Length: 111
Image 1 (cartoon, rainbow, N blue to C red):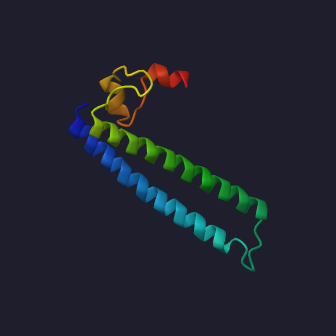
Image 2 (cartoon, helix red, strand yellow):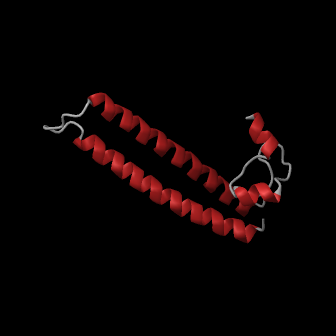
Image 3 (cartoon, rainbow, N blue to C red):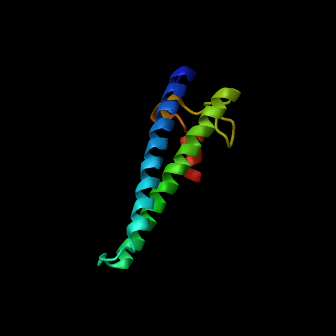
């Protein structure tokens, strides 16, 4: 994958993730602020489970965003397309499937 295409895809993914994070964080805050309102007869355990799901989704999105941002840094530094573990070139097909890939497929399986 050429670096210009990678940069475009990574920036698009970054914007998409930032939007999803903003929505997820806002929704979670809204749910938490109204969960104890009078007249809320729902099971409090369900509310806690939903909060845990929101937290897990937010964490996953944050981790993916960090991965995308690290890939953009590697593009700027000239190390994009190489494994952060071994320095081995990451195959083009893997980078096309995931432009933010940090490891070769074999290395990722070892993790």
